[in-house]
Amino acid sequence: MPYNASYLILAYKSKTVGYEFMKVNLFNYLDQTFKITETMGALLVSIDKQGRPNIMTIGWLLLGCSYYENPIAVVAVHPDRYTFKLLDEVDEFVISVPTPDLKEAVALCGEKSGKDINKFKMTRLTPIPSIQIKPPSIKECTINIECRIYNKIRPPHYILTPEHRRSPISKQHTIYFAEILGVYKHE
Image (tube, rainbow, N blue to C red; front, side, top):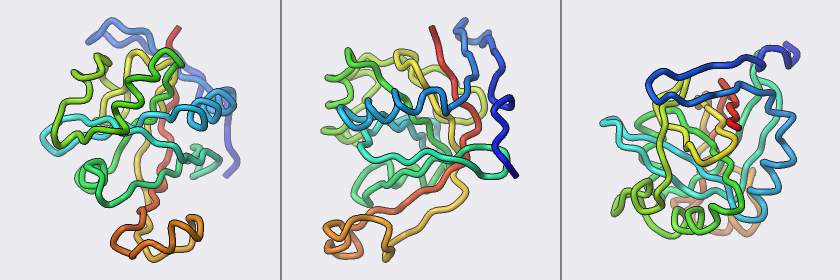
C-alpha cells in the first residue's frame, strides 16, 4: 500500500502536560534528522515493564516507507546495552531528535548506563507522555518519532558492516524494524 502523506497531518493538545503536539510528515524532517544523527547522535527512549524510562544515544538510523500505510524506522542495539533488555520487555520506543544545544545531554546518554543512573534527571531532559506508545517523548527535542517494533533480527545476519560482523555473535547488534505510528513536532 503506498505511503499516504495526509495520514500524518493532524494537531493534538495533551491535557496532562499542557503541551502542544503537532503531528507532521516525517519526510519533511529527514534532512534535519539525519544531519543531527550523523553529527551528534539522536536519542532513543525506551521503557521497562514497571514504566521506568531510559535514554540511549544512537548514531545509526534508517527511516523509510512503508509498513502498510506507515513509514518505518530501523535501529541497531548492542546486547550489552541496557536498552537491549528494555526493548525485549516493551516493544516500543521513541526516536527524539535533539537540537545542537543538547550536545552534552546526548553525550551523557551515550556514555552512561541507564542501569546505574536516571538519565532524565542527570541530563535535565523532560519526559512527556507520548500520544500512542508507553515510552515518553522528550520535551526539549523538536521532533519525537513514536515507534512500535514489528520485527527484530538477532545475529548472525549480514546487515551491518564487515567490521561489526567480525565480532563474536554474542556481541553483534540486533536490528529492530519498527512501524512509525506518529511524528510529532513542537514549536
